[in-house]
Length: 622
Image (cartoon, rainbow, N blue to C red; front, side):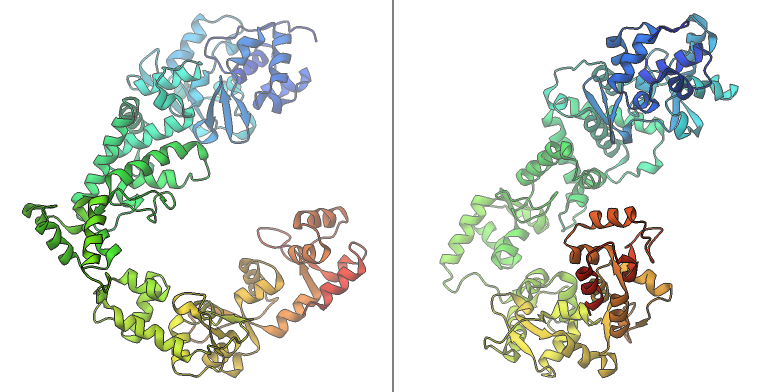
């Protein structure tokens, strides 16, 4: 390939796409895209930073390929690789034009070649962690409007299109931070041998620095939407100072976050309550394994400094041995009252009189010391450590239900005297025994039977409705499965429960979940069919927003139409393979052609596409 008549020098710190754009401008091309087309270089390879594009541009411009590679941000899906560092698309800015007017003015006056090709785009300006110009000590300017997708990598074209007022924008003075210097160093291939940070990908260090700093400066529940560029600069500066000082410094930051929670005298320990927006952000990135070392550090710190146990949740189940107890956690574990435990701890000298002014969840005791004390109390009480009353969560555990379901049951069957009070253990256990006494203890078939919670969902009612039916002996089929726990041991027939709750008139109906499962589509697609008038749905009396569908109508629809999923199940293929075959044969869906949701086809349109026995089976699936 012949060399270009006009070329421009590659500048230090320049991005590869900027160089391509300037070469195009110097040679009179209207855009970088048109230039690439005339040169026979696929433009996508330039935008993606492919080596083939670098080598071709180096050949026609006479530049050193190794020099051009230093300005490449090679894109792989949502990640950009720059000199061995990785920055995700969230932190690699292409939608807004970021620049230093003073730098570009200097390029115009000191550069060589055609005037339009003199200003060049710095690679660092794309990285959102960089918000200042280190040469001029000012904030970077940001264009008022977003950059169109077609021209995002065409620096010269964007620069020429900027209004004069934006080209000469006056930027406020802003001193570059150590955080930005660190980021620039790593982008240039340099590391400061800070093993704590250098082992993490650059985007993780940047995101963590800004989040930690924002929590430090603006509070643990900071709202990122209310922070401007100056605020984020201060946040990055503060957060990097904490992280660059090492793991002990980060641990001190976490401890301060915990102390703020404890000072508010709240009882419920949780990740968000302890660490605020930092926790919420890290939890929202669970699929990104590059954050695992940070999450692991926080988990280990929490287990060392807070009364967390192996079954507590912090980025998932902790699964680590308990190191600290609070009086509250010891009470939950043993069933003994807080008052009794506090008295024994005071009597044995483990805590002092002044500790009594502190709430039970904030008095921490070494787990080994507490367990030894509990073991001694158990030996002195042969009947075992079971208090006469239990907390709400333990009462729910006896019945095998969650907090909300427990409260429904407690209100309906008067299992507690007042809201949030401890519950008599014997009353809860007696209620469960009453349910089990009604059930058939023989080895009756359990096929098609459901526990009360599942039956309630299928019958569009509450779990207490099903429990009332069981205790009133209005159901003929009630079977005991003692391999289960709590109320789930008692199994009922859904159809019988449905008839008892809704009457015989509703027997010819199915719930939304059953109808969707029958048709092998999602519930949202089912709702769209109903709203379009294809299927008839009826609101369940007293069932809130629950709807039912006519069973006969669902069966008729199922013998006439088939979803991609149902076709795949009958044909022994994957849904993707079925969709590909139907596209190839030109078969259009009757429902769901546009928008989200299931694609549903007329079965008669499938003749000749799939084997005849598969078509017959689709028609007969009633």
